[in-house]
Image (tube, rainbow, N blue to C red; front, top):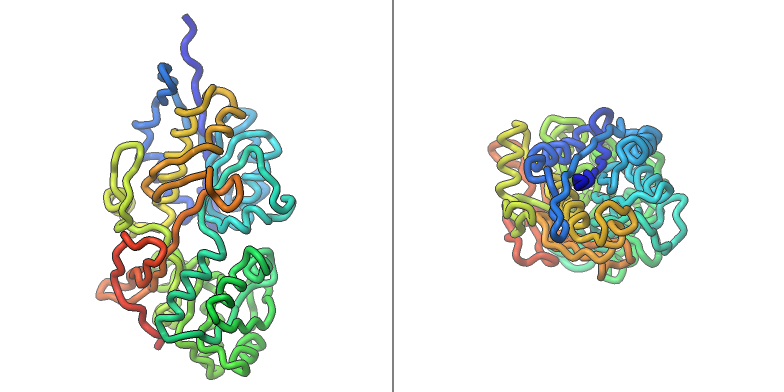
Length: 399
């Protein structure tokens, strides 16, 4: 009797380069879950499983090569990836090209669907994603602006790349949601990343009376804006930012605490996972708090928001292999992902009811980096989309 075939999960992680800090949660999750992933039960079969990892080197060219190696050399039945506005699209596009099922996360779904080279509203056959939308970010940010009073005049610090164009999108973007809430958006036009001088943008916002500033800037560009704005006399009552500030480390480049002025700005941001989220792992029943505690204990680093999504990636892969009509057939695995509805440590994921066929949504709430005796803490200040998550602090206006 022939032994059962081995199933193989390929993982593309940024182990080196500028995104390596964001690769840490997925690397940790793989180490933590390895004993539970030795086999997958599919019906009456108990199939051996191996995980193969490749380093994207935080670069799209290397990311594409990593997928090719996983597909050809490792024979991966499914590929997992997360993080990187250029790296993630490179991985999923290569998986689509090679007809390898792929699950990804940490990227607004509009940027996933409308990424360069993808036809608008195309139904991808092989690649699946879970995250939130730019419209969800707008709703959360509007909740926080409105804590300061009714409709605000909001300055937009958005770049001139795909991200900025999608934020402005008249159907799927951030702008129409915010405007429907009664807010007036002041958009001085996009800037090139990395920014060298934002005085022209600041002058425009000051002339038009911007009370609040919203952005999707890197921490370095936001720090530049904040310093130049204060010296120019622009003092917004609140800054909301959806990019790197969603998961900083104190004292690390890309964090709110890496720039003293920005650290005191009380930047508000999106929250998609915390140790207090009321969810459990479908693999072993571990809670969000259990996972965060294990990460901090084993790595010596504070928990990161992507930790919950990294764990959910592995949960989805195992579920797809367990539920596929033939777990050794890539098309059958892709079909299993398409019909997946699963409770994960990052919350319920449902690919049968997303905004597009290949998307499952993750709810967002509002958070703010507030000073504590031990540095800074990400406080939950609004919970409209997830009322079971406790609010831990009041929103504070900027100093």
